[in-house]
Amino acid sequence: MEPNLTVVLDILAIAAAIGMVTVKIQQVSAPRSCGSCTDFKKRTHEFDKAVIGAATIGDPNIIWGLLVK
Image (cartoon, rainbow, N blue to C red; front, side, top):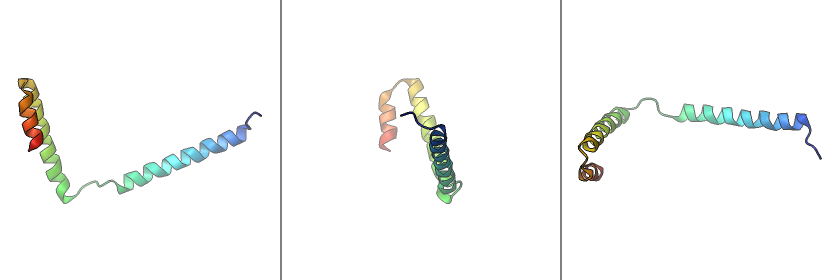
């Protein structure tokens, strides 16, 4: 039994519609700016710089110390 072309297209259209709704919901619920977001971004940037600096030195103990902080 070969699937009908319209049935296959209907299934693809439904899957695409569900995907678009899911993406829209995620974009709406994702926070864009908040009071603590600025602090989080600052701390993340500082941590990244410290890890990159430790990696260039080549001492893994420094990175472990940063993770424990």
